[in-house]
Amino acid sequence: MNIERNKSLKPYTTFLVEAFAKYFVSIENVSDLRNLITDPLWQEEPHYILGRGSNVLFTKDFNGIIVYNQLRGITLESQDDTSVTITVGSGEDWHEFVLTTVKHGWWGIENLTLIPGTVGAAPVQNIGAYGVEAKDTIVSVDVIDLGSGKERTLANHECHFSYRNSIFKQHPEYFVTRVRFQLSKKPQPKLTYDALNRYLNEHGSVHPTQEEIMNAVIAIRRSKLPDVGSIGMAGSFFKNPIISREQAETLETDYPDIKYFDTPNDQIKVSAAWLIEHLGYKGVQNGSVGTYDKHALV
Image 1: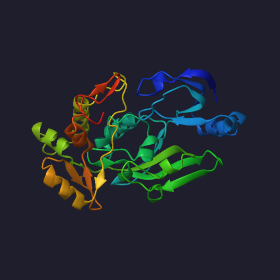
Image 2: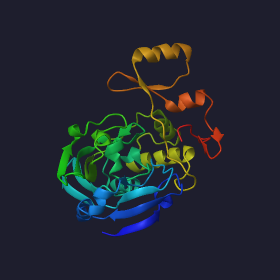
Image 3: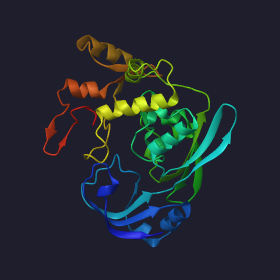
């Protein structure tokens, strides 16, 4: 375990804002993590877990320990005629993991390509895009309790997944070490998202392959989102508000062009992008802070 001092955090967040960490520790295996949480320094200093820093803005230097997750590895645990179960280190890059699944023809997360971050962040945030959420394929999540040092495996239902939420947000002491996914060997395209369906139809993909779906998502995202590293940003930052069907019907009376989507529990998810654009804030900038001119959520 190597402890660095006065480490610049600018390369480790997508906002690209300069800040320094008093201590910076890269965790490459579970032993590193155990050594860290039993070190006297851990009890003395505040600490923060950092993946790829796509949702983190340091407004000042961090006077404590930054734990940089570098837990790697993709292991095929089991398979049958229809599916595979894969265990993935939480420090693996999410997009690279998606590319690996498409390369092997394992269906389930191709719609989630190009999302910045680590595999370990996927269950924490229950990341989602283009009609798919991480919870749809996660079997279980391995964690270490940073307080007690005990290991635990949480099954999907124990993770309390909901829209951009999970049990891990309520339990910051849980350090995600591995995530287990079940993916399909048989084609299971998820084409419920209008923009994705429209793109595929316009490009003649009536029965799209997994790679065509992934490439379509990449093309759509690149047309709307700046490249990570080109400007300081946090990607799609805002959540879509969820309201009752009655509230949606009332809003639609006053705003006929409002954009919304049905959810499985009969509630309505209103487009945050539409709300921001409707208020005139798309592309608005105040000093060095603003929303992107091609996508209001950025």
